[in-house]
Structure formats: C-alpha cells, structure tokens
Image (cartoon, rainbow, N blue to C red):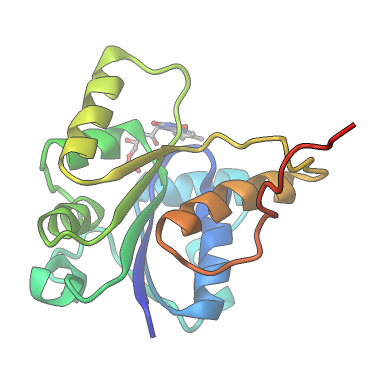
Length: 192
Ligand SMILES: Cc1cc2nc3c(=O)[nH]c(=O)nc-3n(C[C@H](O)[C@H](O)[C@H](O)COP(=O)(O)O)c2cc1C
C-alpha cells in the first residue's frame, strides 16, 4: 500500500488538507502532522478539535509536530514513501522548507523528502505575494519541491464549495499520480 505524509500548516484553507485526508485514508496509509497554528485554523475554519480529527480517522497516524524522533523524520524510512503533501502550506513553512530550516517535524519531513527525492507538494496560500515569498517559491522549486498555489479553476462549473475544494485537491493528487474522482478532466470546449 502506498504511504504518504500529509502536513497541515496554519494557512487558510485547512479544508484542503481535511479533504485530502478523507481521500487518502480511503486509499492508502496516511500519516498526519498538523502544526500548532494548523490546529488553530482547523478550529477556526472547520470547527474541529484535534480529538475530533483523530476519532474521525482512527486508521491515520497523527504525530506531534514537536516530535523530531518520529520515524518519518529519518531518510531511511521516508525514502519508501510515495509523497509528502503540505496542504495548505503557510508562507512561514514555505520559508523554512525553502531554506532548510527544520525547527519542527513538518519542516524536517520536507527537508528529508527533498534530500531523498520523495515527491513534495507545497499547496501554498497567501495573497498577494511579497518578493520574499516569490524568492522562497523559487528556492523550494530549485530544491525539488512542487510549489502549487491553491488556485481553483472554474471551467468545470463548480456548484458548491466542496466542488471548488475537490478540484484543488484533485490537481494535487494528479501531481502524485493518486487515483481519484475529485473533478472531471477537461474534455475540450463546446463546439457551437
Ligand atoms: C486564521 C488564520 C489564517 C491564516 N492564514 C494564513 C494564510 O493564508 N497564509 C499564510 O501564509 N499564513 C496564514 N496565517 C499565519 C500563519 O498561521 C503563521 O504565519 C504561522 O506562524 C504559520 O506557522 P506554521 O507554518 O508552522 O503553521 C494565518 C493565521 C491564522 C490564525
């Protein structure tokens, strides 16, 4: 079974991580790390506490973001994973990842994933971007991460917030070749 690490940091849009968790939990083995502010935003935007998520996904393994001894902090373990997803990724976490600063488990896992060439997707969310943000996106890209903005499209005619969220999560899954039915792929324009 494919293994993934899903990281949720304290950017707006924690619903992307939550939706990804729901899907990954069905398909594979998923290990989850939520940053301190990630939990705050989960409470703010989803009205959920850590225990709610842990009860909802008993199969998923939740790590404490301060636990630098977790197995996934080691290259010998993480090299066998199919991907690391940071959904959403704050500008602060982007900065740490881009500059190789690992002061928590999420940043360490990303550093290790990049050195072991494990696919790492950073679903960034901020608006607008400063020059520092853009430089960090370039640095992270040059280090091998896939920097993907949480920017939904509308050509698939979403009707609900869930449709919009599913499109973004589906695009991230496409990057990792994770099978899904989260959105319908573009089949060409209407010929009138
Ligand atoms: C409700 C809320 C929404 C936030 N939204 C964003 C955001 O969209 N993008 C961002 O870069 N930071 C955002 N922040 C700020 C980050 O949470 C803050 O920079 C934090 O230090 C990130 O740490 P982390 O990456 O370890 O979670 C938000 C904070 C709060 C409380």
